Image (cartoon, rainbow, N blue to C red; front, side, top):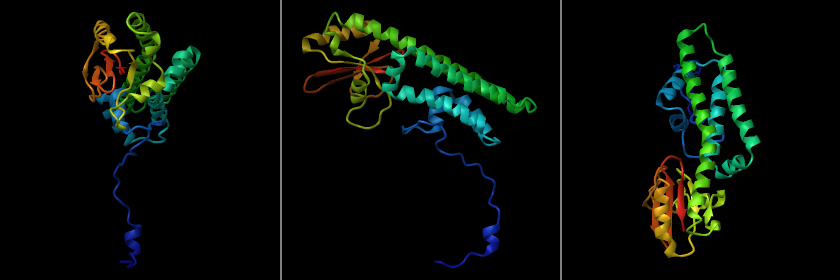
Length: 246
């Protein structure tokens, strides 16, 4: 079992096979792989281009900067506390967007135009990255507007304190007693009594929210279930979030 290995075998050069690291995107404390994050943020074509470039990269600096951009976007989307902080601090939000765009511009400056085929792949990735940053920036305004609409409509039915957008409420109700946090609630609703339920459901439908059974984790629908009190989870159609009535 402990027999010595001949030196010629130790010195033999192993085949040049590209094996990518599983995690290169920073701040990713979720179960998502790099591939799954890139597919969500940039799309399948971008992942294919990125895979080709990763297999032939030199210093890897441009790749790291792109992964940093994706990591910043991903961690904010996956952390309601960070999202709330940025919504409450427009200056900090603006600085983050500027930092993301600065990294993309640095990647653009490092393009090697002497290798046209490779350069075209980089250009396509930059275009996808710029679109992702723009979508990320627009999400803040969309979230603010939707929150205002939700409060304005639902506070006619239940107390304003029963409409909860805070990170703690959203994190607490993200799953059905599992740790598989795929999508976070957009808002948590805690009606005072069952008499408010029917009106809240109608209002949420008017707000283009859909109701589905509890336990289905989808970003464009609503989760409905009964417990000690009547509870309801709602998800806006146009956002990566859901809402809960408890």
